[in-house]
Every structure is written in structure tokens, then in C-alpha cells.
Length: 325
Image (cartoon, rainbow, N blue to C red; front, top):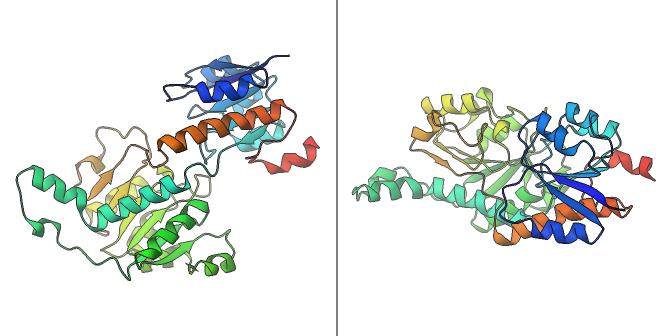
């Protein structure tokens, strides 16, 4: 029996790793480049499994799926998928939680370092024939500075270890993390606004949910130090972007280093593009050659596991386990 697996959309040059894994279990891989709900429905209506990158897998889409048993997403977050609707329909949802812990934590720390040492700003000055270290004033010593982590899952825990090597004190906000776990790593858990008050660098690692959308907004920016930088390698909408622009324009914070923004690609009229104290990257923190291969293999393996009658290793809606048994 042949199983139909649709990739709703993808940015990769090759799908060979996915194809190899799915061929082993007799699944046919169908490529699509969907952008709208209607396009996803047309491509996936009779699919047994779905692999998803950015295309919307909304309730409207899920209600039209006739055969789907599993949806597997490229990445950690599952904000493109209506998880409640999928669970109600008995569709297993998988992600990949551990493929880029080093890449994202490295990138977040690279953005921290670039912001702290004004690396990008000074580079731009030198390339415009201005050789003057005073263009970067003020720069502060990293040792004994405070890094506040918004979210304390696997990636920020990895970042915490790296930052501590530099003598940086680490605090975190995560209402789901036991204090004892954080304490074992030498990290103090704080309320969000208190974290904003204490931190010199704030690095966002919270997943995008209804509860975290706009989590960092005017109230939080007003609580921050004027010398503080905010870093985001998670999801753009976790930060209220209009509030961020206001905070930057009013000099309430020193700057921002963003790998993600509310709308991607960033609109050409965004005020952030014209601010010299803002570093912008194109949602690249997850990427290395190694992490990309690992992601592709694991996202396909989630689907292959279900085709073989098993649960996916990276199951998100675990409440379905008892039902499937």
C-alpha cells in the first residue's frame, strides 16, 4: 500500500533526505509550494501525512483533510498549525525540538556580542571611511553584566552555559520551569518585569502561542535599562514590534538584534531598517549544514514512524497517546 505525503511548502534546494526516509516505508512524496489555506486544502485533502514549513494548517484546512494521520513541521515551533483542531480530529502533530540547539544559542550569543561591542555599527563606519572608535561609545565590559532569558527551554539553557563562561550573570523568566532546575544551572527565575529591570541583555526564546504574542510590549520596554539590548531568535510576534520601535525612537533601550520580525521578509518601509542601533538577520539562527540535514531527516522520520504504525518521536499533542493506544 502506498501512502501519500505532501510537503506543503519548502525553501530547500533538495528534498533527497526526506524522500530517502519516506521511500523506505512505501510513502510517495508530493511537493507543493502552498501559500494560502485553499492551496493547502487542494494539495493535502487526500494526504495520509503532511510535512509543513510556513503554509497555514488552520482549522479550516484540517476540517477538509480526509485521510491525514500526521502533520510534521520543520522546526521547533508549531504556530503554523491549529494544534487544537488537529488534536480534535485525532491527527498526530510532530516537530523537531533538538536539531539546532547549538546553532540558535550560538547565534543569539553572536548577536549579543555584536550589540555589546558595536561590531556592526563600527564596521559600517569604517567602510564609510570613518576611523573613529568613539563612534561606538559607550561600550561596557561583558563580565558581571546580566543576561535575561525569556523562556528557559533547551536552547536558552544551552545559551546560559555559554554566557556564564564569559562571566555573565544569567536570570530567566519561564512560568513552566521549576525553580530547582534553574537553580542547578546557577540561574535565578524572575517575574518578567523584574527580569527586564535587572537585565543588560534580554534574549527572547519563548515559543509563539496565544499567550506569548506581544509578550514584550510597552510595559516591559519601560522597565528596561536605557543601556539594555533586546535579542530575538525565537518568533517575531513575541515582541510587540510597534512598542519596540517606540522604545528605540524614545531611547528607552540601547538597541535590538533581531533574527526574526513580525512580518517576514521585513517590509521595506519598516523603521527598523533605518536604525543604526538595530541588527537584522533573515531568520537564519537555526541554520548550519549539519542542522539542516538533521531537521530534514527528523521531520520525515516523524511521518515514517506513523506510517509504520508507531508514534512520532517528537510528538507535540501527547494527549493523543492514550487514544492511539
